[in-house]
Length: 246
Image (cartoon, rainbow, N blue to C red):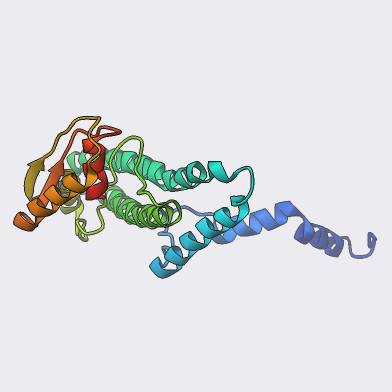
C-alpha cells in the first residue's frame, strides 16, 4: 500500500523489486567491459571447473535425449555446442587483426605526448586481453571436443578452418612492438608447425584401415616429429589417415 507520509520509501521498495532495478544493479557491478577506463577485474574460468562443466553439459544433454525420438539428433547437437566456441575464436581473431592495425597506426602517430602514449598503452592492454580471451576459448573448445569424442566415439572436426591452439606459443608482451612480433610468430608457427612432413594420399574406395594405420605407425616410429599432410577426403584412405592423426 502507498504510504503518503513516506513516498520515497515506497518508491525505493518498488525499484528494488523491479526487474529493471535488478538489471541496473548487475550492470553496475559486472557490466563494464575490459580495456575501457579500467581493466576487467573478473578472473578467467578455472581450467578444472571448466573441464567438469563440459563433462556435465554433455552428460545432461545425453541423459535428456537418449531413449527418445530425438536421440538420433544428439551428435549434431553436441557438435554444434563445440562449434559455438570454435566460431567465437574466429571473431576474436578478427578483433586481434583490427587491434594490430590500430597499434601500427598508433606507433606511427607517436609524437612524445602523453595522449598518444596513453592511447598506445590502451591498445596494448586490449591486445593482451584479446589473447587471454582467445586462449581461454581455445581451452573451452578443446575440452568440449574431448567430451564430444567421449560421448559420440568420433573426433570433433570443424567444417571450416583449423583447430589451432596458441596457448603454448604466446608469451607475455612488454610493449607494442614485442606484442605484434609475438602475435605474428604465434600465428605462423601454429599453422606451419616444425617437424618432418609426411605426405599421404589414397583412393576414396580404400578402406583397409589396419594396413594404413600400421604403415603410419611405422613412419611415426622413424620420424617422431612427423607432420601428416593429406588431401582431407571425406572418405577412403585419407579419411582413415585423418582419424589416425586425431
